[in-house]
Length: 153
Ligand SMILES: [Zn+2]
Image (cartoon, rainbow, N blue to C red; front, side):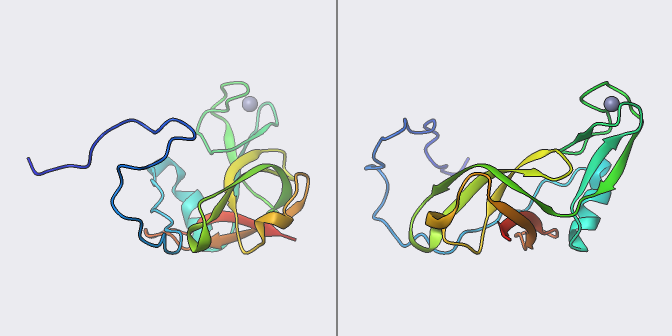
C-alpha cells in the first residue's frame, strides 16, 4: 500500500496544528461533489435548474429535509416533492477559516418549516445575524450538481 495521510482523529478544540507542513495560502473554498443517491435524483435534477426541493408527507402533512422516502414524522411512505420558495431565516451560523478560505456554516429555516445545514455566501460574515432573512443561491461543486446555499436578502 502506498503511504497515506496520518489518520489521527480530529484535533481537540483549540489545539494548534503544529505538526502540519509550512502553511500555504488556504485558497478559495472548494465545494466537494455531493453524494447523489438514486432515490433523490429529482432533488439534484431540480438543483441543476436552480430549484430547491424538500419532501412533504401526504398522510400527516409535515415537511422534511433532507429528503427521504419515508416520512420521519409518521413513517408513511406516502411522500411527495415540494418546491420551496428558496427563502428563510438564519437559525444559527459560524464562520470558519481565514482570508479567501473563510466560509460560514449555518442552519437556515426555510419558510416551508424545515431547517437545513448550509452555507451563507456572498456576504460579510461580520454583518450576519440570527433571524436574518436569506435567499437561496446555488453554487457549483466539484461534481455534476450545484449545492444549495444562502445569501442575505
Ligand atoms: Zn408523515
